[in-house]
Image 1 (tube, rainbow, N blue to C red):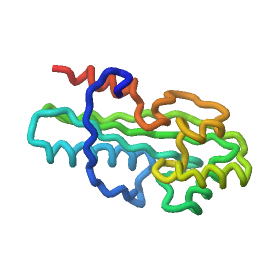
Image 2: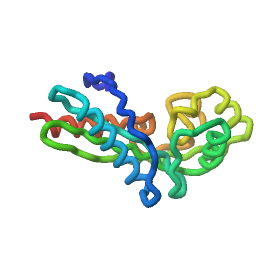
Image 3: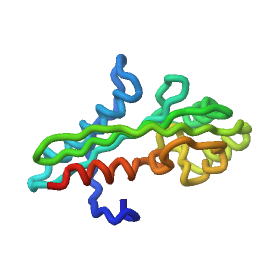
Length: 171
């Protein structure tokens, strides 16, 4: 957002991230993005635009969130090894006129990873705060064989989509 010249302030929503049993990964990301935006918007006492976002990695229909520990991170990276997966980021923009909810999907293909590569990467600690247990902008960049769609979406925010949403809400 800084690179795009968009001024912003980060405010934590404290929304609990728990997927409902019947939710698809896309529905889950969209719900969380809205819940985060609403929670922040309702706590602010001034007219602002609030952007909530949530990212989920999906492989074979299975959502991969942030790993809970090293074993979970290893499990996720093994699932991603040698195959394509989707990165879905939902974005909810709220202001005094209402809400705009959209999402972007990017397909990422990992090359086959060795056990040592997975262990070394997990050992860096980088996977623990990232959906799918990897950061494409960090040490996992070397795992990527191909990408279809918005790279920024995989980093965590589809900047192009956000810019369009912000332009559509300008009064």
